[in-house]
Image 1 (cartoon, rainbow, N blue to C red):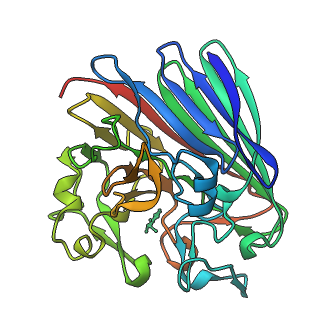
Image 2: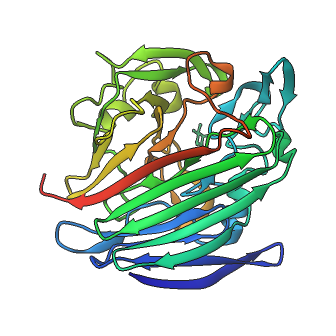
Length: 350
Ligand code: G6D
C-alpha cells in the first residue's frame, strides 16, 4: 500500500493535511484532517479508466464556509433533532440549533467543522487513516466529554471500511455517519439518475414539516421507495409521490436489519460498470439525492448540479432520541460506542 500526504490549506492557522492511500489495484482513497472528511475515491470503470466517484469541494475555505458536508464525518448526532431538545433521565436538554428551530448534523460546530488528529498506518494488504477528536463537554450543547475515533481502512479487496468508536464521561448522545455522495460515472457534470439501486429495506421513514422525521415508518411496497429489486434512481427521485415531489427527490431514512451480515445495498452505474456494495451494522441508511444545484462554490468550474450525487448515510434512524422505536443513541460511560460500515467497489457489465 502506497501512502502520501500534503498540506491542502489552513484553518485557524493550523495545517489541514490530506492523506492518500493507494492499493495494489490502483484504487485510492484520500481524506483530510478537517472533519475526518473523504476528499477523493478513485476507482476504475469497466474499461480500467480510473476516476473520482465522489463529490468533493475543491478547497478548504469553501468546505469550512459553506459546510456542504461532502464526504464529511457527521456528529455528534447526524440528521435532525427536533427543536434541538431531548429529555434524558428526567432532565431536559437544549442543544444548539442551526437549521430553523432544529439541530442539523451535530449543530453549528459539528464534527465536520473540527480539525482531527490523524495517524496513518500501512500494511501489505491494507492501510488505515486513524482520526481522533476530543469533543469537550457542552460542545453544541451536548453533555459529556467525548473521545471520538474514526478509522478509514482501504483494503486490497477494494473496500473502504469505516469504524466508529466513542466513549464519554457522562451520558450524552452519539449517532455518527459519513456524508459521502457517490457519482459512479466519474464525471460530476453527469447526474446519478440512471444509477440502479437495490436495497434490502421494507420500510422508510416519512418526513413531516422542516424535513423532520414524522415518527412513522411506512411500507415501501407499492411506492417509489421500493428498491428491493434493482431500479433506476430517477424512478424515485423524479416521482410525484407526496413525500418526494416537494423535496424534488429523496432525503429519507430506510430501515435496515442491523444483524444482516450480507450486503444491504448495491448501487450500480450501467454506463461505467462501477458498483458499490454497502455493508453496515446500523439500523438505517439515509438516502439524499442532492435535490438542488448548489452555486455557493464551483467544482471543476461549475456549480454542483442537481442530482450530482447520492448519499448512503448509514446511522441509527434520525431523531431517534425523540422517536420511540427508532433505536438507541444514548452514549453512556459504561457502554463505549462502536459501529462499522463498509463500501466495497467492483466493476461489472450491465
Ligand atoms: C439537506 O435535508 C438535507 C440533508 O438530509 C442533507 O444531509 C443536507 O442537505 C446536506 O439539509
